[in-house]
Image 1 (spheres, rainbow, N blue to C red):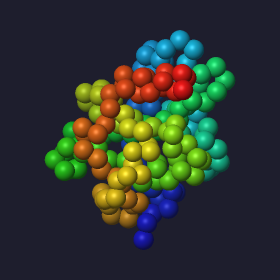
Image 2 (cartoon, helix red, strand yellow):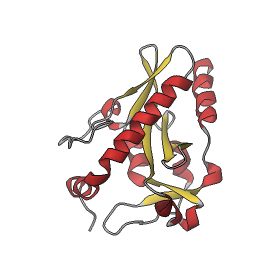
Image 3 (cartoon, rainbow, N blue to C red):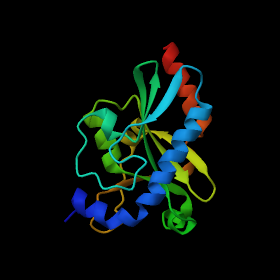
Amino acid sequence: MALDARQLKARYQQKWRIAARRELAVLNLLNILLPDGYVAIAAGLGTGTTDFIDRSYGSPLDAFDLVVLRGMDAVAFIDVTGFWSEQAARTVNGGKELCVGAWKLWKAQRFGLLDRAWIVHVADKRVSLRWLPLAALEAEKHMARLVHGERPYYCLPQQKWRDTSAFIRWLTAQAHA
């Protein structure tokens, strides 16, 4: 039986400090790298904090960790994930794959944001950011249960992931589409 949200939050509460720092690091790096006219904001419930938020998200603005705005328009929705250690990375196919919780895809589908939702995976020890549009997960058929009692994950080879400049190119291309 899968753990509910409250049980998952309790299980990983000791790691929230690292997750909050990771979210804030990505937010700050994005705001350095984004072109003029764009700004990233921390928007999701619990983003950047270690506090327990006893609410569920009800809109895209509180469902994703970060939102990129162009003027007043939300143009990209980003969730931040990552490895706490290199040992954790090696447990997934020898470190050759990066994994995303299947619920990230489901969330993007729920809000109709597959064309604008991304996941960024941070390797904390190397400060390495790898980007993937959540729409890329739709083609993936294989899901893995990495931890007993948790929902499934999609695990994709690292070569399918992109660097930050690819995300920035995608973002600016959307403005001209």
